[in-house]
Length: 113
Image (cartoon, rainbow, N blue to C red; front, side):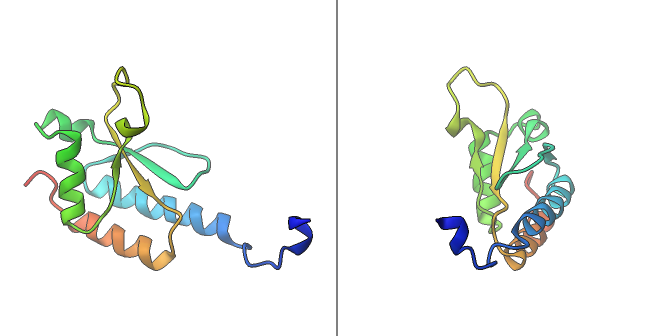
C-alpha cells in the first residue's frame, strides 16, 4: 500500500546522499581524517588513526569537531570493547546546505590544536 501512495517526494534522494558522501569525504581528507569507502547508507565512517597516533583520544577528536560546529560520534559507541578500529561516524543524510556548511567547518578546523 505504501508504494502505491508514493508521490515522488523521495526522488533524487539517493543522488543527493551520494553527493553528500563525496563532499564530506573530501572535507574529511582535508582535515586529516580517512573516509572509508561506502556503497550506500546514511553515515560516513572516517578513520582517525593519524590523530590517535598524534596523541588524541576518540573523545578529543569528537569534542574538537563539535567545537568547530560538526557533530560526530565515535564508532566505538556502536561496538564491543574488543573493537580496535578508531573512527567516527558522520551523518550524511542531511540537506545539501547542511553538508556543505559542515564540510566548510571541517576543512577550517585544526583538530590537532
